[in-house]
Length: 173
Image 1: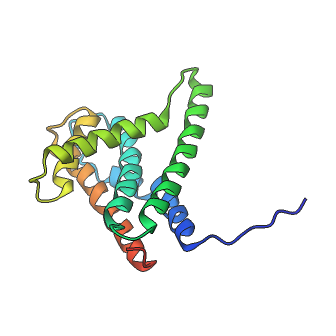
Image 2: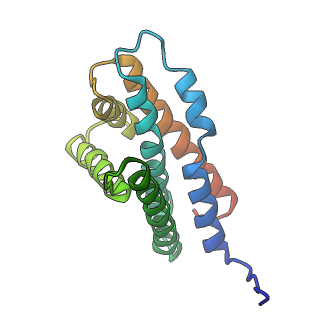
Image 3: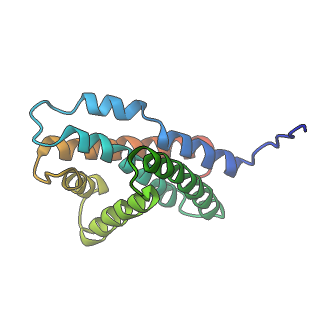
């Protein structure tokens, strides 16, 4: 049977592109390579938390930067549905490999709540990265490690900047 591929709307294409960016690990490898050797943190924890932060930052940036019009809800819904399916695949694979049930989407939601709650508690912060960095370091196991704080802040700033630029380019902002 022949499958007819339909062209995506600009909103669907944007959500698809943003999802693919969110799960791409190229910049994560670069940021991990820049984590100072004297960082007082388990590097495996940082490597585990960076992809979570990136996915969350893309989702947050969609809501933050598409601040008007009908696109915000549609792009966000399509993006988070793709994340949910992606997380289900990770959960299934992890379960098969380890014999342990892990709900990766719930992990993402828990981290999102952690970061959103922290931002809501620190509304006087000059920018979100000032709040995100320490929360990221805390999720990695050492809230006070400046190198880990900077790693989280760097991921947040770079990811949010990329999403903002993309949305401007495709004129959804």
